[in-house]
Length: 550
Image (cartoon, rainbow, N blue to C red):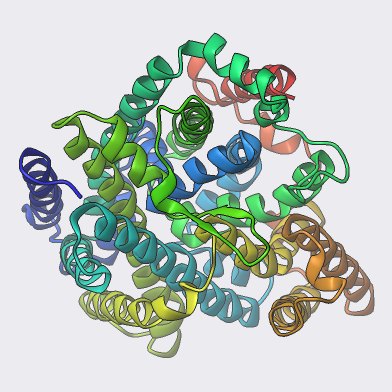
């Protein structure tokens, strides 16, 4: 537990963020946010690339990442850093291929895009799935991680701390809309990264630098901990082919087809800012391996040297094996390795990750409910009514996510729990988006049935694995399960597209690429800021990094 100066810093930070969010949301504009839905949900299409990139990163990185990636670094080394580095490739796809369609079609939501490309049934289904996934994945899991950390550090009851954070985050999010969310997320990203760099630097120095780390790894025959790509049959269940086959299924849904993430891009000033923001986030995503995962590995090294006491988070199971609790390493690192004063900054970083992801999800839920459900049945509704409906839905989402906490608390690893859920949700959505923009023959009915059947198939497999954990099916790693489900959905949609041939509307005829090179015809900005130059540079950096840490 911590107290004194560090508690004061943490409280001051929370008050400051809420104040900034309220100020941005309430300050006078030509069209007040209370009556302008475009201003409330899409920040008036005014976002520039730095803010978009920082907001994308902040919405993605939550308290779960800080806690669980450090734990994964402690347990298995850099392996789970693949979730961070592989994101760079999908952000390139977002910038090059998805952004032009989203902005050209002038949609406020991704379900709206699916209606323009396919039909209304696809829109309705994706809206419902997106709302459910935002409540479960982006809010409930984040609340749980934050509650566990705050209980460990401050001794506050988990549910009390979660409710307080929910009220404060919901306050500026519900009042201020996307602009308030993005501005606060930009600040929170800087704080989050700064806090992570502090603990990384401290651990690096205590471990004796890179040579001290590699020496311990060599002595303990644990060199594989610094390898990102593992061989077939690796005990982690995530060999190299699972990363390259399974992650794109999860990543394309998460980064290119999930409203919570893509909404920051939809609020861009123009296509160049949208593309630049996505690619900027791709470069930032290089950092988490070094500032979130590596500190966990260094904590393991320090434990081997006797410089880090982990006895308080260890238990012995019935088989006599020592088990390290998945939710305790990061908080131990803060309390044991970080000096007073800096602890408060680290707690502020944890709160940044928690509040930014929740605020982003709440705003996206408000947008989906308002545009894709409320306006769907009340087309004559006013902007003021849309904003009110969005605010009510955000409050309801908070209440529902709080009720889910006891259920999801059953996962031993929250990070693995999230990815397990995503692996069963993502395949049909990834399929209909990919085929929709790259294949002109992808028909409306084929997409509709693929979303329905694919979603029920994923849910069925997920439930079956939980009810019968000893079956062969239940032992398939979630990354490969995502790939297998994607193959099934792709075969289904391609087959159905021939059974129910496409009948394009005047609008849908413009919403697929005739050739993969077509989106590259746009000149973009000149110089280093050009989206083609940035894409090539980011791709090159990632290839070099994977070559070094293969």
